[in-house]
Amino acid sequence: MNAAEQLLGPEALARHGERIALLCGEESISYRDLAGSVARAAGALQALGIRPGDRVLLLMRDTPEFAAAWLGAVRAGAAAIALNTKLTEEEFRHIRADSGARLAIVEDVFATARPDLAAEQAREGSLAIAGATVSAGACDWRAELARAAPAAACDAGLATPAFWLYSSGTTGKPKGIVHTHASVMASGEALRLLGIAAGERVFATSKYFFAYGLEHGLLGTLSVGATGIALADWADPAAALAAAARHRPVAMFSVPSFYRRLLGEPAEKLAPLRPIQHFVAAGERLPLPVIEQWQGAVGKQILSLYGNSEAYCACMMMPPGSESQGRTGRLLPLTEARLRDAEGNEPAPGEPGVLWLRHPALAAGYVNRPEQTRAQFEGGWFCTQDLFVRDAEGFYIHQGRADELVKIAGQWVQPGELEEAAAADPLVAEAACVTVVDAEGFERLALFVAARGDEASAREAASRACEEGLPRFKRPKWVRSVAELPRTATGKIQRYKLRELLQRELAGKS
Image 1 (cartoon, helix red, strand yellow):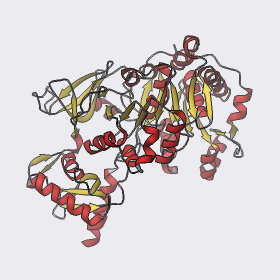
Image 2 (spheres, rainbow, N blue to C red; image 1 turned 90 degrees about the vertical axis):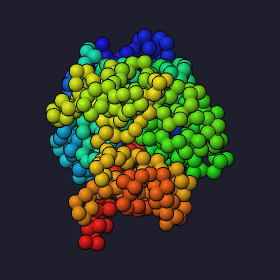
Image 3 (cartoon, rainbow, N blue to C red; image 1 turned 30 degrees about the vertical axis):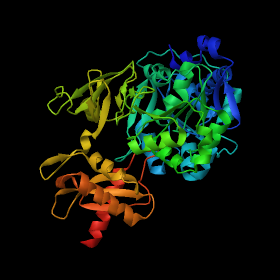
Image 4 (cartoon, one colour; image 1 turned 90 degrees about the horizontal axis):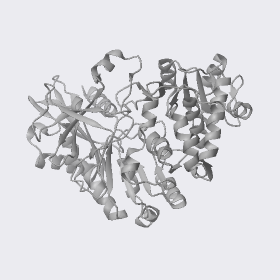
């Protein structure tokens, strides 16, 4: 058994061989041609000394070439590790050392941008460059592909590592998360819930190094015989609208902050989105104002989806046609869930609890972090650290992070309450709340807002909303405005950067 072979082997090709697997700008590749490219990539990796169990880094744009290399590593029995193309050199070095990768396949544009790092890797014999500009001493990936013989799929068990994900670093250095061939095989449940048929087109704006983009832009689409629409470079509204107009997808997967950016476009420019049947959002909290504004601008609802890097696959989703009412979704078929209170018991009805998940795609654990693995992985279950309430209809409602709860004046506060209160005002585009220690050593709340117009007016509106809608102990001590909230590449708010911003300000006044 090999997950890459399951997706692109003889049985899959008998069903979908002549269909288009991927569209990327003007480039398209059929299932049959992608399968051939994957087999040659596996052969090229073997020729470069890659053996089962080795790790292969991929620093490439989201293209059919990337897809073939990633799946080729899985076919060869190695573990593929797709990297954020905006990594700093320090982050790249950390991941390379942490993973112990034998080889990095790097697209030439990224190698050229980091000449010292490329030269260092070339000297170590651990660099293959994909593109026209190949650094001295590096392997020419495309030349290796041209002369490689197609390789048979390496026999691997379901528990054999197939790919690693590196977390997006909201609190510090990225941590590696090990996924197996079973994870690949479980892909695509959200697509099946939406009724995506073989040959239909699916557009995901999130990048392939991110679990959400990897499942719904590549592996999930292959698992149902659909066509994935890829943006080689980072998504922006113009590129997304152009791709939707050109390729006419039936479903779009994106993050709430990107839907918000699209809503900033003139109404007439949103025309290519209106024929799309399904819109899905994940990766961060989906605010009710965005749902309502999207319904008004495009005429369709946005369905909330929940997952995480440790589960890889989507775990819960709002079914099409269901009323949001601030709910996150129902469990997808392969997911089991438990809620636990602070004592480890099931909470009373209507009370929040920490979500524990069991899923066939659950990670094997964290790389080089045995204590954290033991703390969060227990008997086939994973502690998400996310707080949820389950209602009488079986819907889960996200309440924020358990590790973000803070005691203010002896009472528990969830920062998301302040964010929702502030973001409800039309002058506030976004809001994020963090805790900061004041001059007397007490934790206090700081609220940061991004304005839709005047910054001073947005600050005043946020303060007023908290004054009117929250008890005194839940109100922020500081309200500050920023041009935009700092985010990871996957769209998550980097709260530590906001905290550091205020800490520097306070230190300057002391």
